[in-house]
Length: 245
Length: 245
DNA sequence: CGCACACTTGAACCCCCTCAACCCAAGTGG
DNA sequence: CCACTTGGGTTGAGGGGGTTCAAGTGTGCG
Image 1 (cartoon, helix red, strand yellow):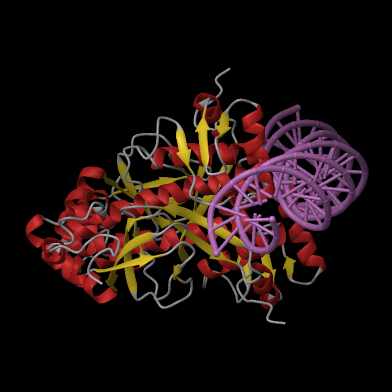
Image 2: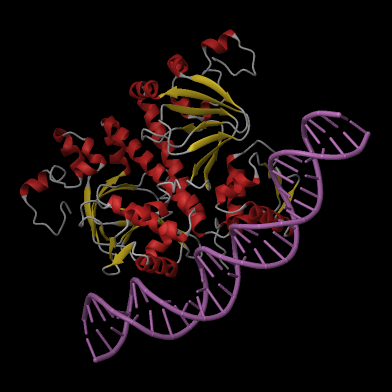
């Protein structure tokens, strides 16, 4: 497969898939010059995954790197008895497989139809050697993820259920800019996914949503469509601003 | 200051502090050739911090990078109301300040007398440009930390108090190899630090230690000195091995 | 229509937190 | 030398936030 199956394959796209990639500017690929895009395209294999497909399995040999070009992907870890912790929801432009060990440190599942570019470890190594800017950009990316992970630790270790849900909503709002009107959010993940992300249960997430609705902090257009009505109050709850009073 | 104050300054150390640095091989500095160590040494400023000193403040402008050469440092984040989440205990060889934003994403406090090498952002930038291997090593380091952060998210989001304490003990055992006899651990941090690391309270940590003692999983030589007696059982608890039975 | 699945809501329980007392070792100063 | 203080750690009793268990409510899709 050289192109996303949902689009008609045109000659230019076959010869210059990366140049026409909408995700390029949002991803690490953006640091590669137009002139060198051929190198990138030669190493990339485009794949499409349906909702529910797990395409990275924690513990498997880490043979490939992935770059998400469309859709939203859930990253998670499991305990032997099945308890799940979602470590992140990532979308277009996100680079996966940074775990440098020989095995993947987490699993990845498409929570809606998703497209990814796959690079083999070997090709990636070559690309990194030839384009130092790529490595620089990857380091930058890794640092941002590290900061986000630390923020999530603070959430999981020290915030209450209400604070966690408020933080999640604001975090998701910030990430999914422009996809919807002003403060209306589309949540592609299930309540179970949200619960596993926030270290809560489905019921607690649902109850907290309902409580926020009663308190006029938000409105639930549908289970997946949330309109934030009082972002200031949510930010206060999330611990982003101090109550200074 | 060009040298650790506790040691007599010798000529060689002044001219070649990095070459004599015991932490070099354990840190990112290890990738710099002997011949280039002068470059490294010229950029480094050695500083010593006493127990309790906070030398990185979350939110402050991120002007410097640090490399720990001795001692143990606690990394943490705070909520406006004072709740604290410890994101890690790091020791000799650890590189700090990877947060690429213009402000630090966390605070750092020495929990025992510690020595660090400080590099300015500008010097670091120059070093990275001149030594690609350094950037490569930093990326590697960042990936390891990312994997550790994800593991900690699993702990904070989904493990019970007993599982958290067991995970902590085994994790600390793995990190502090060779410092003590077989399975005797020195815990330089207080119960409060451990609690803030595990998302628990002091009392719960203390009670869990006592419970493990009653169950012959460990012995408490003193509050800071723990001897693990049944690592297999602890590993089972920590979720490292499946009960397969 | 009717099944399946996700979500919501209610009631009871429990693990961990809160509050409080106590222990103990290490100063500190008269 | 001892009285007093201080800080960290332990232990107990009671309470609460979130879980568990269970039932009910949509809602999309064959």
